[in-house]
Image (cartoon, rainbow over all chains, first blue to last red; front, side, top):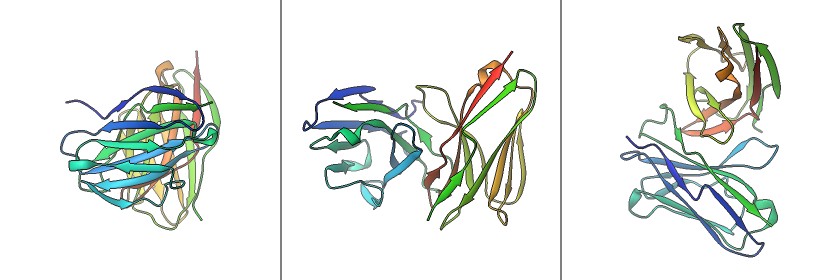
Length: 114
Length: 108
């Protein structure tokens, strides 16, 4: 069974450009989470989908970030326009309906804004 | 506020035992996870504690005391491949609140 996959693995863009990150969760997982790790800091929660609905987006930094999960399958996270402080590793994780079960993480997308 | 503390770095010798501590103060608690992360890879699940006590799984054990806001991860018979970052994370209804991670170096 395929794990959580993220694309691209690396992205280098200029300040002001747009970038879209994609996450394919494990098939059948209703819960999908986005996290971010900025250099030197801990992994921080961004938002949580249950199927196609946003359950909690309290961690989204500002309105330059837009997450979608059309059809309740894969998810995208768009950053527009990107700023230098958006650089970091963006992780996606998925889990089954029961919130007590472990989340399975993707390898992350390393975003560098120059 | 939310606060999860764990040591930044630890070093241990191959074959030895190491204990990685984690203390937490969070507004909600639905259990505590430990994840292992090798550089450039995805965090992988190690253990989950929701009740007080010790959970043992092979060479890895995890302990939780909810009254003290304290957990530890115990690694026995250390191997070189155990060199990695170990992440303590509090579960809040599925959303994880992470500590900064402990970078463990296992030396021969």
